[in-house]
Image (cartoon, rainbow, N blue to C red; front, top):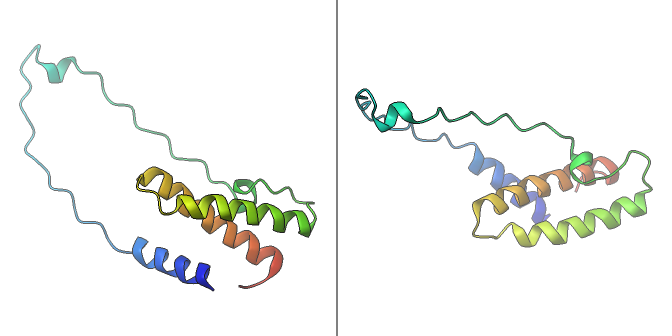
Length: 111
């Protein structure tokens, strides 16, 4: 039940629209200036989409007892990380907790 509440809260927080970025006037680049000598910044590739079972490393024919033990272990690990001050770790933990909930609901029914 507590996990469902956390999941609904994280969805409601994620649904808020972000403020539009404020654009600054473009700086004029003189010939030979630092702006012209800088290499263009490469755009990061989109992350690959993985299923919740892949994220939790659960193969298709794993017995239910092993699935349950694996989900317990993952929940303990990522529930601690969900309160981290580092936003990268916290985001990773939120994604994993969502995957854990989806796998649990798929194999063991609604919470």
